[in-house]
Length: 404
Image (cartoon, rainbow, N blue to C red; front, side):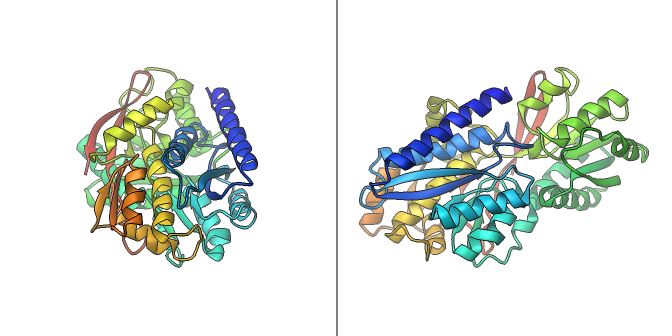
């Protein structure tokens, strides 16, 4: 499965590179996609990338930006967990590729590194579709960092309520030692205790190790009935669950959005994780959801894939902001972004680029309601969101219910 994904992404990236090179003489407007093409979320990244690319393709097919300018998507790999790689990738996008805006990064630590090292100093608006750490909220970002996904401060509360509702009274938490893991773990601990539960152990772990048996044994010695794993499905999270089952230390698991992927059950074995609880960021239903879903299926990716709809919305919003501003320059793009995402204004849905462009050219205010919901950014660039309760059944995760 991973080899297939890598070949698919390599082909897409090569195609984009050829477009960028071949269109050098045309009027190009560049957006960047910063993603974890390698590393612990490599199986989650492809549909997010494809959704982002689909937004760009729709815009170009419906007349392009401004005076028919071509929107080009330039990608870079952050690896998700290497802050230096994320910083270097963002620096290349901002200072060499001269992108107008950034979709990404995906992992919270990568977003924070990219923002602090390049996007903020370069005055580039960054919209992350997947960085959920509460630490993103607190960035001193000159109003340049936004996200189309809610904070884990909320996801932690929802997961706590679900666990208590399932009769879990005491849990152990292991979390990947980065901004995502720590922020989620702290939110879950506070919320679970507020619900009357007990967190008997909460320990960080480093991603990328081959053996977590010592960490698992330490957590098990506290006597928890359930182990909550806040990590990545293609990294430490998968290894920890597999080794915990092998050792017999835990049989009951829960996780966050970083663990919701088909590769988990494939690696551990079908039937061994049935009943595992997890949460993921969902999408609020809007009148435009069906159009996004139909287009995604036609493009060959799962419209419900984790953070895919948020990736689509991030790209579409950045393009709308450029159109609203009337120029493909960086200054003032944040203000234009807030304008096209917020009430009042005539509502525009996914795929309606031609309509939006015409309204903006006529001087009409618009309000984009996207594939993942409305995006009324608060003062910190955050949005409210929807959380989906997930459960492993058979070959993978199934949706249980939407939690508002």
